[in-house]
Image (cartoon, rainbow, N blue to C red; front, top):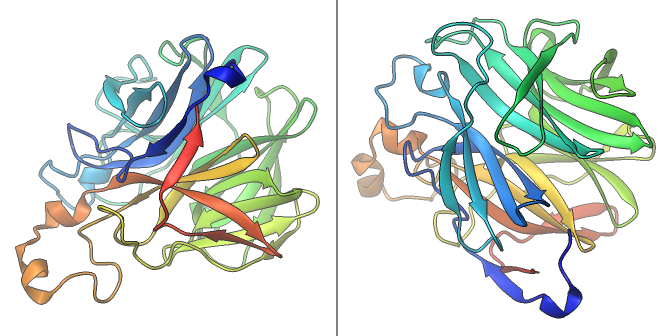
Length: 322
């Protein structure tokens, strides 16, 4: 990130960080710095919470939304990524994972044909490349020995050695992994986290340790590893609602950005879903429609290492330097 030290200013990030102005349901966020434009990009699954829901149709037919910000304090909705379709029709894109390598952005995204009303359809992992985060070239489907894979996380575990973690819904929604030496060809290496079903794994390093955070639908599971392969469960985080604006309900499907030696966790929550006892009175609950309960916002908090665990105070104001 090419920002001169003397130009840096401390800024406070808002709560919520971002709301989608079209469907009011941004989920599965990923945040990346665009060096050429000198601004942050937030890409996410644009769930259609305000559309008519037939079964689970509202979580399908989703595009990838884009918002940008110079300093993280104010986000401008820019629309959705175009030109991603690999077949005719209105199709489904979930959970973009983007990594920059040697001047090229690589995106791995889950794909479903059409707009299903249920969960019984195949999910594929697709690979795209771009030089600017807008114009994407389809590179192919990633063969992960399964027809129901979603939520890729990709991390460079050694020079020119990349590992992908993902949810395999055909295998009890456990976390599986694959390895690549060029980001184009991947070899599945099997199951890595099997203590519970989960999704949205995210791997990063902080405080001299390797961490994984995943969404097990009852808060966020935290693991640590010494080799990116064998994982030890730590204390869970983001189970209880916070007190900041719209920071209600469990944290879901995160992206972690390590910046200037600090770690920032971007997550989504459903502020009207009532996922925690006591979030709302009976009168308030009676006013919420199904569409209200489906809505989501993106939030950000800071992660810190304390002993053998990660901790996250979601009620604390979040500042960083830009």
